[in-house]
Length: 177
Image (spheres, rainbow, N blue to C red):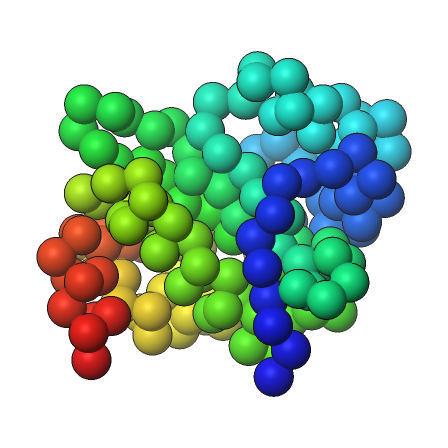
């Protein structure tokens, strides 16, 4: 299997960022903020905010180790230094899905968050109908903590959102297996 790494976002990633941000199948479960087409300039501006330190949290490009080719991104959002927690997000380009890259990227982000940053808890929200993501997060060891009923509206109508969490000790126990 090809090795995946997490690296800083670069301005030259903007065209590929636009690919997923403008892909209807990719954004349908992400909620608001993706209803309108995203221009190349919009994508560059979002990356520039990260590079300038204006983004709350940390965003990483998911890429091939050997070429650095952008495959998607993952983030630690809304970090809370006192509670040592953050919200996790992950998205891949349509052509990068179904190849095991998401699980590899998720494991790298968990290592970073729990081992390097010292987080005690990570959480995420996932649309119930996004069964590929539900399977990924459960396979990685996230625990279902609750359901936000009719929390997300898509072209298909209302959808429930599952809240998942993982504690540092749960992560460490799985890592040792």
